[in-house]
Amino acid sequence: MLAYLGRSIVQKVVTLFFVSVISFLIIHLAPGEPSQIDPLNPKFTPEMVARMRTEFNLDKPLHVQYMLFYKNLLTGRIVSWRDNLPVLGKIWERFLNSLPLFIVGTILTWTFSFPVGIRSAIMRDGIYDKSATFLAYLLISIPGFFFAYILIILTVTKLQVPVIGMETFGVTSASPFVQIMDRTWHLVLPSILGATGGVAVLSRYVRSQMLEIIGQDYVRTARAKGLPSETVYYRHALRNALLPFVTMFGLILPGLIGGSVIIESIFSWPGMGRLAYEAILGRDYPVILTVNFITAVLVLVGTLVSDVLYTVADPRIKL
Image (cartoon, rainbow, N blue to C red; front, side, top):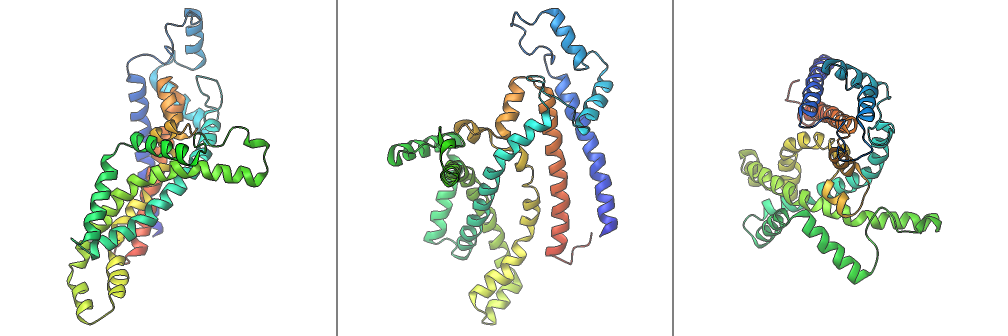
């Protein structure tokens, strides 16, 4: 195990290096220069642009810019080009805002996907299976922004409560209990919206995986021995059907930093998705590269966690 972890960490560090180089080159080879944030702004005089290029090392060779950027990133000195604030501080603040959405949405997705998918597989071609399939494809086909607007309109018109933002305006002067309940309420709709598509997709994977396992000889043998259906499906079949989802579980870590641009924009939620989107529009390259680097780190960590969990779930697999 230790030897495998050592080899895997070395491989992932090398992979991370190439990812950082490629992402840096793609950003700097894109049309337009970083100093051309707003070329039509009369305040951007040639002297100001030249000073900006010197201050952010844009006048140096590309390989020198690469080394200086990641040196500043790893030492925590990288700053945003838009407001000159520390990038890691901005990302941490937005990360804390996106974290509740990610946690609640992930819990809802994985909690509802497995019961729906398992029951659809057990009752294959029945009314429940056909209804779940129809609803899943309906949720997949409906655009997220359209579904969000429907939820907002129904909630505002029927319940007459605010749903935009992380908190209701003026609630900061209320008691702590009211503030907590207000934050919780504002978290409900974005989390439900983020989980609907995940439940629809993941439940289909669960159903197909369960159908494949149910058709195996050992499952038919267990049923022929007269074992209860719950034991056959949930102890023998489900345990083996879970193996592919161990890999998927490790790969949800990038969602911690990715956020959802559509959901956060519609609900005015100041999260990671909006931060990355605003950075792209404003050509705030330090923020873009930092978000990309952290996402790559989370992907590699997620794959490592998945490999380890895979061996725990199935001891037959050798690292």
